[in-house]
Length: 316
Image (cartoon, rainbow, N blue to C red):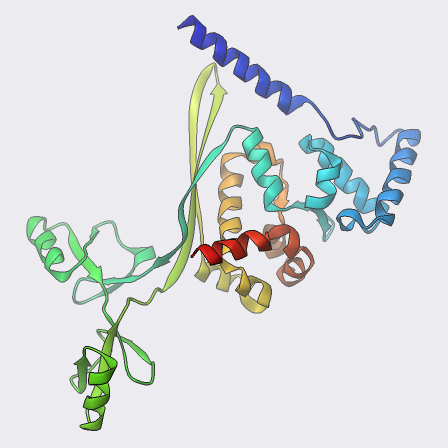
């Protein structure tokens, strides 16, 4: 028992040293000291000449330098992953994740761009993202009937069936009329069409939305007690549309990655606001300022790992 406590103490000590040890490469600068400020400006001018990190001016470089010191991060990393947008320093997702990891926060992606469908009890259509608590998901209408019989307080719901005609137009089961004739395949549908009928073919369920969800866990010492803190965050395709994310091609091409980053940032702010110290993620700041288009164009390389995204698509 004592040995376990000792190991826990050593582990906490190591984490504390790593967290408080500033290894920015520039050490700690007093920007109110004229000599140190002049030295920092000279250094930044050399950095600007190399186009490293996209720093455009000395003032931008000083802003990033101050943020690097506040977050206790290496300056060489910050100039590549922290940018100045509309007068604010904003970080990309890689900085956000590194800060949470350093603080001992763990997370699990419980929904990775998971499709959401419509369900029905035979009369009403429910969106999966807005299912009431009294609804129980079932695979078929037969299972739903059993749920209804077992508990009057519960309503069994099952996926809405979808159909398509020969022109490719899609209908759910509540949109088809008595004039429609169900065919088992295209060949039968074409024969029915030649007979003057209106054939439809059963197709897989059509998703109404896509959601990414993260669950975070963090342990903190509060009043000499270890407290477990949890947070859950999510972001969806429909929310991205409402925010105007798809007005540019960048987000359309990388919808899954960008929505995942947005979902992660929302949870990170809930679980570790004391770690982020008010630092906004780039797309988060763009939503507030209404500059989402410029942000996606200017910083898409830092927000999105294109090689990683292409590899994911190939695996799928």
